Image 1 (cartoon, rainbow, N blue to C red):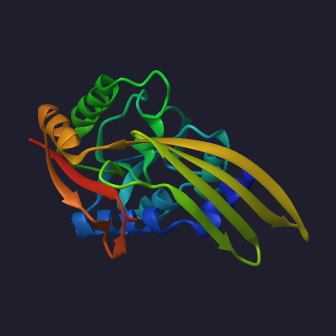
Image 2 (cartoon, helix red, strand yellow):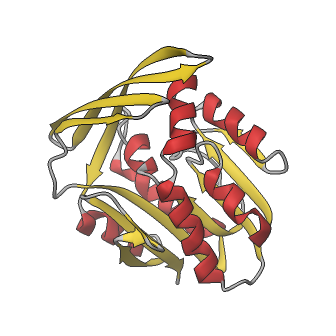
Length: 234
């Protein structure tokens, strides 16, 4: 869960993946008008703002109330909900997205069962229009993510110490954000689950979704180890 400090940092400086996914959606639709676009794990609404003119309605869903609050400020005309990515009811849509490791976050809950993900895929397939598209990415199981990552900028610093045990990745994140000349501190621990590509692809097919692997969205590459998918109902 993102608190106010980390949510603000993520909103302002870590937006390459949602912006790339927005460009990917625009390329897929070739200027045509989409009906509804749903962003699961929407964060602060970067993607939805970028595609708002493409759709008659955009819907943002996120587990973090702080992120949803930022989204409402960014794009007041959208529909916003606080909800869990694997449990939310998805309305009928031309495009559904969950980019930025959203399903890996959602699947790290202690009570997660693989059937939860299968049910999520089935609900999304049912929500998609005949020409609809489902975009998502996860942490792939073929890489060890352990290590320490640091970014230092004039307005903020972020240090992430990452440990992995089996298919669970844990990120201990310490952030400082400059607000009115003073630095405010945030400490969070994020848990994510890795998935093997064959497992995901079998589940997608069983849900009635054709799929294509992606290494990025438009001209934005996914980070090493991540697996992206573009899916359509069949």
